Each structure stands twice: as C-alpha cells, then as structure tokens.
Length: 476
Image (cartoon, rainbow, N blue to C red; front, top):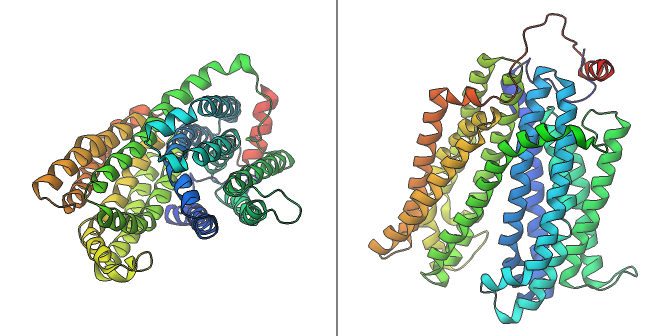
C-alpha cells in the first residue's frame, strides 16, 4: 500500500530513488541561486554600489549563522530518516518535538546575540566607514528572520527524512516568488507600501519566510503528518535534544569551518590585487554550478542511507554508494569537461575584461579538472553522515580546509609568486578530502555511529506508515 505521507526508500529501485529524490532539491538550489542573482540586480543596478557593498559585507555573517542552523537540521534529517526507515514512529515523534524546540530556540538565541553584537562584528571585519551604518541596519533586519528561516530548515529536513523532497520545493518556490514580488514594492514604495530602499529587501525576506512557514505548518497539520510541529512535551525532550546536539553540533562546526576557510582563502587571493579577486569571483560562480548537483546528491544519499540503515538494509546502502558515484561522478565529470573545453565562454557570462578572463581560465584548468573529485567525496560523506558520524566529516573538512588548503595556498602562492598557487592548493585539498572520505567509508567504522539500531525483521510490519504511526501513538 502506498504511504499517505513520505516515501519508503528502503524498497524499490535505488537509482530511481536517487534521481526522483535529489531532483527537487537540485531545482530548489537553482531556484535560490536564481533569486540571489535577481536580488543582486535590484540592489546593484537601482540602489548603487554602496548598497551592494552593504549586502556583500553582511553575507559572510549571514552565511555563517545559517550554517549553524543547517548543521543542526542535518541531525534532524538523520534522526528522522533512521526512525522512519525503522518504522519507529514513537521515536520519530520525539525527534520532531525535540528538534522543534531546539531549532526555534537556537534561532531566537542567535537573533538576540546578533542584534546586540552586529556593530562589533562589522567593525571586526574592517567594514568601510561609508557603508558601516547601512550595513548595521541591513544586517539587524536580516537577523530577525533567523527563527523563521531555521524553522523552514527544520521542516525541510524532516520532510526529506521521510523521503519527501517535493513538498519543500513547492513552498520554497512560493517563498522565492513572493520575495521577488515584494522586493521592488518595498525598495521603491509601490502600492502604498513604505519606501525602504536597501532594507526593503531584508523585510521582503522576513515577510515571505513568515508566510511560507505558517502555510507549511497548516499544510502538515491538515495532512495529519507525524512531523507536523506541535507544542512539545518539554519533560520528555532531554535525551532527544542531547542526541540531536551530538550529531548536529559537529555538522554546525563543519559549516562554520567551511565559511571561515572561504574567507581566509579569499583574503589570500585579495593580496594579489583586483584582477585576481575578480577572476576568483567569476570562476567561483562556475564552482557554484558544479558543486550544487554534488551537494544535493550528497543530501539525497544521506537520507537514503539513513532510512536503509535504520531498516537494517546494509546491502542497499552499498548500492546507494555505487549509484551515487555513477550519478554524482557523471554529472561533475560533464561539468569538468565543459570547464576545460569552454572556459572562456563560461567566464565571459560574468566578466568581459580579457585580463581577468585569462586568469580565470587558469583557475578552471586547474580546479575545474578536479570537480569530479569533489562530487565523489560527497557520495561517501553522504553515507557517513547518514549513519550519524558527522564528527568524521567535520574532521575531514578541517583537514581539507585548515591543514591543506589555507596553509598550502599561502605557501604556494608565495613560492610561485602567483595567485595560481591558490588554485593548486584548492585542487590538492579536493584530492585529500576524497582520499580521507573514501578511506573511512571503506573501513566500515561509520556503521558504529548508527543512531537507531535496526529492529528485528517483522513480516507483519505495517505497510502504511500513516497507519503504523497512528497505531504506535495509540499504543503509547
């Protein structure tokens, strides 16, 4: 019988599940990227360089804080997928309650801290004096959206943990469309709305996030989904919150480490002048296109692995790894080929200066050739994360970024007296990351981190998750 909610990923075709599950997430990623381009056009073309600089200065702060929320909700995805795969719906309910309290609480806490320390944070980043005031104002408004953004992250992770990647896409589409409409209305004060300039884009984000979050809450309750948030029973949350933090804190650290590593490497590139910075910025846009399929495939692999490990289907996890390598490796191989064959054409989409393009071509020849390694590392990392061993992938990120990439970028660029030393350091870090990830996957040690041990096989296991959930709640 077909489930009334979610998708059972413990049966059926692995390659079909990978494609149908990861495609909505990939579309969502492209959707968000498209909106960021549209928003940059509104700000840069109509509000001027100062406004664009304020957004640029605020972005690393926002990205780092969002990384904390996304890391914690990765734990939610792992726990939900393992509970769903094992058909332990009483445990699933506790995961939902614990994650709801933890994620919203974290969002409120980070908002309060951010509102207080925004000026100090921007001063520490050496924000130019002429954009300091608008940057403070803009960032403080954006920070108000954290509880709602974290709530959307949590619900998306829960839905994906049950095998449903389509519903988050629909609500994300609605949120992006609403924000796109509200941006010019609030920037320029149309239809009787106040003229807020740059801050209008921040308020547009908040309004769309609130409406989308409320709509998704209502939808889940109408559908009687077991992941519909409710007022949690706080006396029962301790063990689940501790388990979530044990998985989520390393993942949050990993996200922050990646953000800080990007800042350090960008600083090294900046030392070689405006042309190097522009070339790195243009080539990084190609990186985003190449990394997006790999990242989303890794998330899909994590969910498939979590459900199948929860159900005790270790053979299917090996099949997930094999097909993940085929899809993620194949897609990134095609993008690598395009970066090597048509580098100038790709770069000229973002920049026309021939000097910048030439330097960007050298980046794509060196780093673009290694995109496939990045794609494959996300396959093994997805399996490891699906088991709950997020500490391991955090260590791999630390090794790749802070032991290899940043120090090697500094040393090579000075030895070679060229920013191309940074390009080689990035490529080497991909190689090291893949070797470390595959080695740990091959060792099988990640199986020890399994949070939900598989239940004994039960031939009478309820085929309909919704009915099973109702039965288990009734028995409880």
